[in-house]
Image 1 (cartoon, helix red, strand yellow):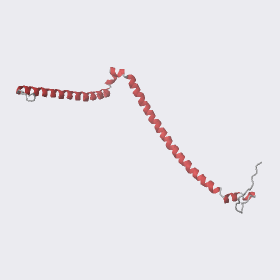
Image 2 (cartoon, helix red, strand yellow):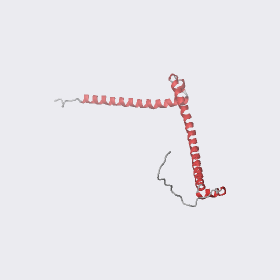
Image 3 (cartoon, helix red, strand yellow):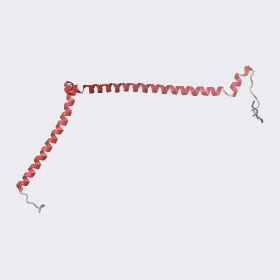
Image 4 (spheres, one colour):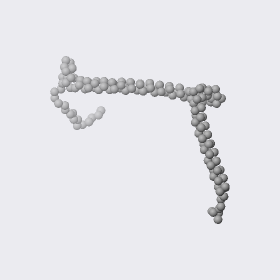
Length: 147
């Protein structure tokens, strides 16, 4: 008969009161933790804005780390400027490449028009060289002799 035990009303009221007190204590501690977190965060920002954090021993102990962070910030700024100049140079080189490609295509078309059969014949007219009127023939050799 362990499942059916008699509990006195006074004992029941005491247990309920203890449970309520425990719950109130938990709620109060949680509330304090939340207040500490929010006030600590606010306090840090206030100290940074006032400059109080510079006079604290903790900051002085972490001064090398602060210099390291400052160095990294300077490096990041320099890297940004370097990347910007590189991209500007890249854009200029692309424009120059486009201009050179268009110039190449222009010169190539001019060369192709000047190297044709008739333009060469016109240029060589005064030298005595004449254009061959007969068609091309294939030369066939029946025996190969190598000396």
